[in-house]
Length: 405
Ligand SMILES: Cc1cc2nc3c(=O)[nH]c(=O)nc-3n(C[C@H](O)[C@H](O)[C@H](O)COP(=O)(O)OP(=O)(O)OC[C@H]3O[C@@H](n4cnc5c(N)ncnc54)[C@H](O)[C@@H]3O)c2cc1C
Image (cartoon, rainbow, N blue to C red; front, side, top):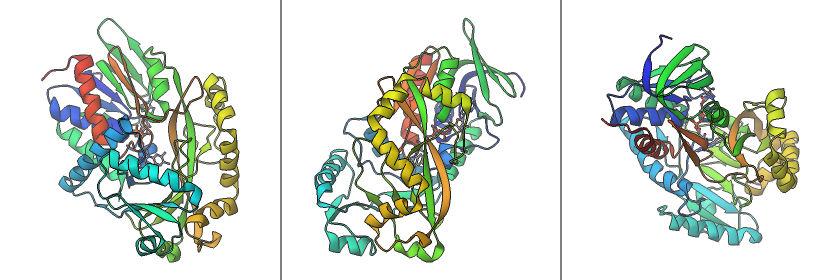
């Protein structure tokens, strides 16, 4: 890597870093911008291991960043896909109440979705649900016809391509190891050499808190990795799912519950669950990283979170280790599903920021530092919202870094 000076270095070649890079480069073509990514390939972590859903904005508290960025992000994403010939599909999503006790929460979701401006929402009874998803059983469902599916790896690579067209540079296989600050520049030391820059945008996902600390920032949150494991439906069982079928989520927990998702390539996945991972990139049950585990357990928020959510944690572990428990949960939505219909699938790891008081941060969280902007919490619907978040990060960068044309 030749040593060069940049105006902005973006750390992280996931969908958020690349969206931000593309939009910064398009708005300010004269700026020297680089993206540094530690893996050899872009979009390797959360962006490459998610459910591929274009969320419509139902779940999020009106006025929250999630509701704003998701609703705005969908429009921008769909337009980007149209313009760049990226396949997507509006297959629709049914959020299904399988028990009377969930009806109040389903009604609340409907009202939230309407308040967030999500178009086309409809509460439907069991007969209409049968027309939408013939194998799904429920007492009532919220039908969101505009929810869609896409391949986020393709989207991220398209952002990268558009960024490079503006003259932007991407360095892969370059892990940021430290950041040294001098009077008016930052030296970003990577495994491939050092870049000098005036400013940094940190989109390092599972390591965003670590990268923020490298710049001298004292973050009051820590990223705790939660693995989400999937099963895939065998080809002969895929007909059981037409689109996206979700349970009514538990509002105390920021995850959506195990669901069925048809992906854009025709496969159907069931999951993800949410189990604590003992490594930030811990994609398998046996993944373990001593330093990262020590980092987690010495953070006070970890224990407070564990005390608050231990019951959910135990049941998630049971579901992770027992296929029959997983299948039982899936049968609540599709009673016909059998263990034989499911083959082991992949897993993704969510970068979930946890506060010192043990709260799981629900909303997106962005921190402005000196010469730096840090994305500290960008869980789902981060991929759907990627263009809206990127646009916001560019605005923050312009304000904080004094960028001009
Ligand atoms: C299981 C799962 C399911 C999900 N489902 C959906 C969904 O259906 N729809 C949706 O909208 N969202 C979904 N999400 C959320 C979505 O995937 C994320 O919000 C989004 O991918 C975040 O993008 P990112 O760029 O911040 O992170 P990432 O994609 O993780 O990118 C961060 C990058 O930073 C790099 N990096 C880290 N440290 C360094 C370093 N020191 N030096 C250089 N590079 C570094 C990493 O290698 C990585 O490539 C899901 C997430 C998960 C995990």
